[in-house]
Amino acid sequence: LDFHKHPGELPNPDSELSGWTKYALSCFRGRHDYWNITDLVAISVFLLGLLLRLQGEPSMGYGRVIYCVDIIFWYIRVLDIFGVNKYLGPYVMMIGKMMIDMLYFVVIMLVVLMSFGVARQAILHPDEEPTWRLARNIFYMPYWMIYGEVFADSIDRKTSVHSKPSVNLPSKLPPCIPGAWLTPAIMACYLLVANILLVNLLIAVFNNTFFEVKSISNQVWKFQRYQLIMTFHDRPILPPPLIVFPHIYIALKRLCCTCRRKPEGERDDRARRLRKKHKPLKAVTPEKAEK
Figure 1 (cartoon, rainbow, N blue to C red):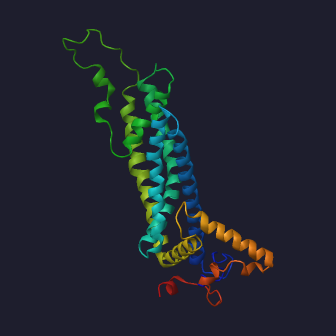
Figure 2 (cartoon, helix red, strand yellow):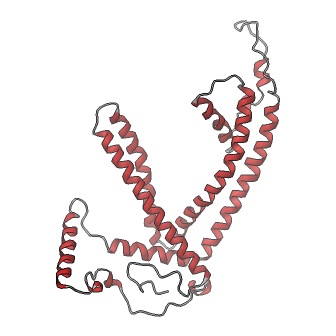
Figure 3 (cartoon, rainbow, N blue to C red):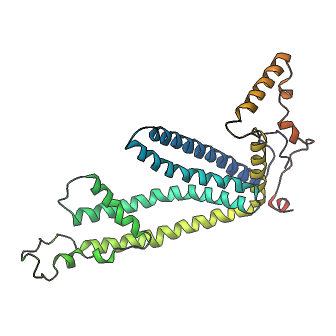
C-alpha cells in the first residue's frame, strides 16, 4: 500500500483494494471519528466544570465532581497513542469494535431485564407509589444479578414475612403478598436467559470480532501508525499557551502565499515532507500483509 499517495489523507476506499484492506480502512476511519467525539465530550465537560468552579458554593463542589468525571475521558484518550505499537494498536481496535457489538447486546439485554424487573417489582410491591426510586428498583437488583449477585436472602419474601415472631415484634404480622411465590420461578427463568444464554452469546460475538481484527492486525497497525504520525506532524511543536505563535506564523505564511498567488499545492509544504515517489496502488492480501 502507498500510504503517501495523498499526504494527510487515507487512500481512496474505492481504489483497487482487497476485501481485507477495505475492511481495515473502514474500521480505522470509524475509529478516528470516535476519537473526535471523545475529544469533544472531554472538552465540553471540562468547560462545564470550569464554569461551575468559578461560581460560589454549592456550585464549586459540583464543578469538582465534574472534573473527576472528565479525567476519565482524558485517560481513555491516551489509548490513541497505542496505535503506533504493532501489538497494542490492534487490541485498541478490538476494544472499539467490541464496544459497538456490546451496544446491540445491551438493547436485547434491556428488554429481558425490564420484563423481569417490572414483573418482580409489581408482585412484591403492589401498593408502592410511583416515584423515581421505584423506577430505580426495577433495574437495580436485576442488573446486579447478571454478574452473579442473586440476593439469596431476599429471593423468598414469603419466608421473611412469616418468620416466627419474637418478643419485640408485634403480634400482628403483615398480610401475605399474593403471588409472592411466583417471583423465584420468574427469577430462575431470567437468570437462565441472561446469565447463560445472552452472556455466552456476547462472548461468541467478541470471539468473532477478535479473530476478524487479528487476521488483519498488520494492516490495522499500519493505518493507525500512519495517521497518528501525520496528525502530530501537522501540529505546531510549541505547547499552549505558546501555540499561538506558530498559528500566527502559519496564518502569515498562508497570507503571503495568497498574495503571491502560488498554486494551491505549493502554499504549505509541511505535508509534502513525508511524500515519496508515487507508486501504483496494488491489492493487498492477508498473505502479502504478513511479509
